[in-house]
Length: 291
Image 1 (cartoon, rainbow, N blue to C red):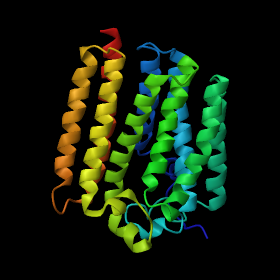
Image 2 (cartoon, rainbow, N blue to C red; image 1 turned 180 degrees about the vertical axis):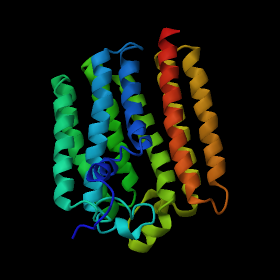
Image 3 (cartoon, rainbow, N blue to C red; image 1 turned 90 degrees about the vertical axis):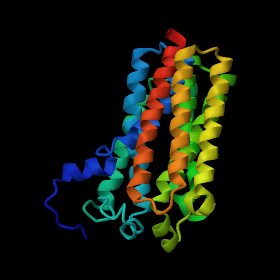
Image 4 (cartoon, rainbow, N blue to C red; image 1 turned 45 degrees about the horizontal axis):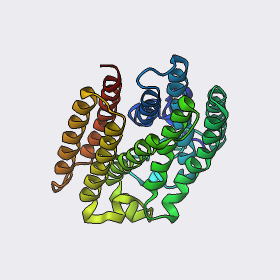
């Protein structure tokens, strides 16, 4: 039964789509933009950028709704997620399914702008997106599944520009997967006690007391792969300035995570900082080609 609420339905749908929390949308958009700008040497087609931006919002919205449909009976037991529209029964399962279909349809329409190879990669990404919530139940490091889904954003955007998967894209793909593993493990740390009590898997639980070290290794690996990409593409000083800034921020985040008794808000703050780190790296990559 749907819970009565003074909240307008449209606002509950916005929350279902997570459009009220843009950090999670931008952190998916960033690697897609990395790939588009780097593959196009700093000057991708403007319509492609529009497709990436809108497609990111549609795709991430679909993924969020699918996740909430899977977890509608689990989310009420987790402090961070108990007020989500499906968990609180503010919206019905039927409404969630309809909105997910509409969001996926919008993503498909936008993907039709891309070449056949990129479109096929979009289709291949869908099962991975759908599988992530299930992975939390059966796989010890479900954040790896999410990271692979994030990696598709790189492959799709890159092939939209070049039409092929040549060697530089794999440096960027690897960096994206490791970066995502890092920041999503941080995000999972805020739910670790709830997830352990419920019996849900996460990388934060898998790595246990060594979670800060795992995050540090993931961020360091991402930095090394980005450095390899910059070296191979002969990017100019603007990229290296941004890269150094990212490395310093990731080191500071690792040091912070090693502190005892961190409040849950710290994990969310570190997650949000990674959006700005990603944007700085994007601007650095553009400058690396054009300046």
